[in-house]
Every structure is written in structure tokens, then in C-alpha cells.
Picture 1: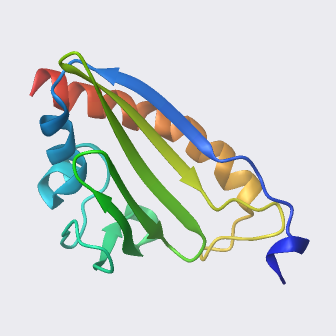
Picture 2 (picture 1 turned 30 degrees about the vertical axis):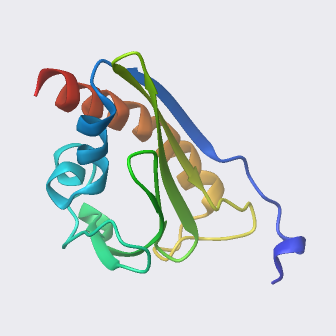
Length: 143
């Protein structure tokens, strides 16, 4: 099926201002240890375009990923699974960091590799990101 025939769904976007310098937030989103502390544990991770790794998605198994954008300390993006993109954007704001997470690649006409419709998974993951962003804030601000 071509991209033009697919019914695209809106990206999931979450924004938060973290009470921490941009370098601290960058470390949390661009290292294996950092990512594991608030999201999912990767098998390994290097902030290098083309780097391939897997995220441990718990009951859904291991999800293949590939880094697509690295612009330290402002932007990191990767392909996630067979359909999704995930990006982290950081903006310095007077000692704090505005953080935007964008989870894209949603289509009403597609199913995930675990055979669930994107429409169903997107709603579930939208709520999940709320908790994950709170966990990131806790990790960053409470240490």
C-alpha cells in the first residue's frame, strides 16, 4: 500500500519544561543508561546516525530501532519497530530545558508487528507517554 493511500493519524506529541540544564537532559535521552532510566532499556545505544539497537518492550518483546538524527544537545530521532519514528527535541530556556517528544508513523490502515491496529495502540500509547514523561521529569529533577 502506498503512503498516499494510507489514512495518517496525528503524531503523539508531549511537551514539558524540565528544571535542569540541557546537558543533563541530553545525557538522559542520548545514552543507554539514560534511556533505560525513564523509557525502555536498550540492548545498547550510541548517538550515531545509522546505529541499530533494540528496545526491550516487555510483553511485546524486543523492538528493532535505528538512529536517524543526532544534533547534540538539541535533537535525537530514531526509527522504532516497523512503522514508528520517535524524536526528542531540547531547547535551552534560562537554565531549564523545554523537552518535546514526538511519536509519529501512525496510520489508520496499518497494524503493528504484534498485530494490533495502529488506532488502538496509538490511544493506549498516548496515555502511556504521559506517565513516561512524568518519569523522565522525576529522573531528571530528583536524580
